[in-house]
Image (cartoon, one colour):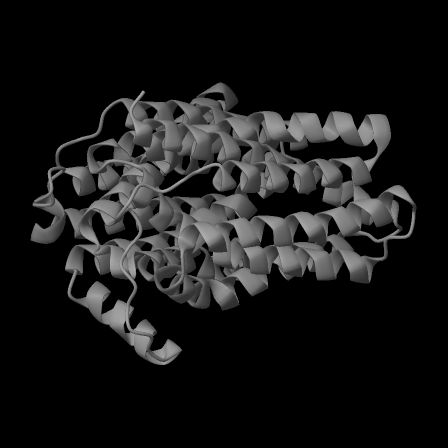
Amino acid sequence: MAPKGRLALTYITGAALSYIGTAIVPVAMSFAVLGTGHGASGLGFVLAAQTVPTIILLLLGGILGDRWPRRSIMISADFFRALAQAVLAGCLIYGRASLTLMIVVSALIGMGNAFFQPASGGFVTEIVAREQLGRTNGLLRTANALAMVIGPAIGGAVVVAVGPGWGIAFDAASYIASAICLLAIQLPAGAAPAARPKQSVVREMIEAVEAMRQTRWLWLIVAQYGFLNMLAIAPFKVIAPVLLSRTSAGAGAWGALLSGIGVGAVVGALACARCQPRRMLLGVEAAATMLSAPIFLLAMHAPFPLIVVGSIIFGVGAAMLSVLTITAIQRKIAPSVLSRTMAMVQLADMGLAPLGYILAGPAIGLLGAATGLALSGCCILASVAILCSQPEIRGFEHRTS
């Protein structure tokens, strides 16, 4: 195996272990909150406590990821998150965890995520040959998708057998495993970007925004991400359970749909690891079209087995969209601004979603659940049609100079 191939395998191994730990947390944390006597409101505060710091600090994380060694940032973030989760796990195991502690620890995890994620997007380009970026991103997305399928099952078994504290402890251990794998990676000479003159945080952010502004295909894709999350994906996650709750299957039906999305994500990620389209951004738009499948099927009250098939198609599209977009950015954006660019893409991906969640409730009351879903599906198709009409999207090719 080539040296860079071994580095990629080490990194993917650590990432996979971390993904499994992360997938266990929602189950363990939910039962930890409920087990301390706090209901849905308490759980909502805990979940929000992780998301908000990530959104606030992502851009700073991107700046530091372009200024400092990315590997060092990632290792520090892993140990930081491991320590936070270890403290919470210990308190849960010994029955001394309060809601306040869980909120604080969730916020600390969100802070760690804000610094780890932008750095990781740039770090992959330092350990993987350019022609192998697509394959590596596909394998990382596959590991993530598999973790989302098996992680909750592991979490449920751990919570039932020994309690939620041990599920949180597993996550802490997974961060340590990720850090150990990163420590084992010795970067090839010249792999890391050259040191740059230090500027103010504001100036560095302006520099990244200017680089994105000059790359029209990128801000078109970023705008589409925010648009789809606010007007399509977030409403789907709210409206779909409402519609399914009116059926005899209820929560089980929603669980089946989520499982279908997970299965589809594995398929889509493996497909991208194997091969990628020459016109990569047209592939992104084809993948975006797949997201509308279960949305339209639910809106039309299609038979449930057909809706599950639609959810699998959704998963395939979501995985392909993610892998192709990340690979295109890594290949075309200068390493000196790569972490900041990744941060802005991630911010667009998640920043407008809360507004979509808020708007979904009034949309149900005003339009009805089925009509609201149909409009979400139309938003997806409209965005795809608009972007496919742009020459920068149609002309973007797989090969780079």
